[in-house]
Structure formats: C-alpha cells, structure tokens
Image (cartoon, rainbow, N blue to C red):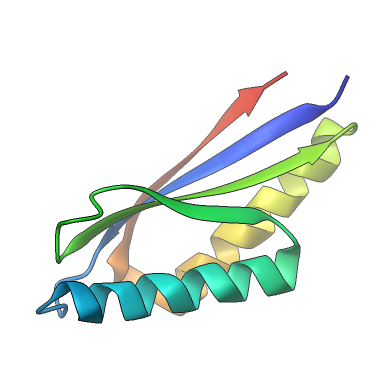
Length: 95
C-alpha cells in the first residue's frame, strides 16, 4: 500500500488588493509546483479572501522517504518563491 503525503501551506498575501491579484499569485505557484515536482496542487481554503490562501500539495509513493523528500523540495521551492508570504506549512500523512 502506498503512502500519501499532504503539504498544507498557509499564505498571507498582504500586497493583494483583489481576488484577481490573489489568483494570479496562487495560479503561478500551483503551475510551477505541478511542473517542477509532478505533485497535485489545489487551493483548499480561503478562496474568497483577498489576502489569505491555503494551498495543498499532494504526493503518493510506496516509499515514505521518497514522499518526504518530494514534499520538502516542494516546500523549499514555495518558500523561495513566496518568501515571507508563506507563513506556515505542515505535512500530514495518510497511509
């Protein structure tokens, strides 16, 4: 049976002044993470708030160490792209 890892990232978009501004940042992040790491990415909460977003990246593997490394790389990439806009992240495991 495989292991499913979910990286949940809380974003604070202080410079966003509309949903359009926010969605541009979120879409760019999601596209970049999908392309670079082959993970599933979705905005899972705060869809109607201008300055907050909750993004989840999901990977599945039959090797938990590989899944952990993958999600760590995703988190590092997001932190590099977002800087202080990434205010919190956590990993949950489903197995």
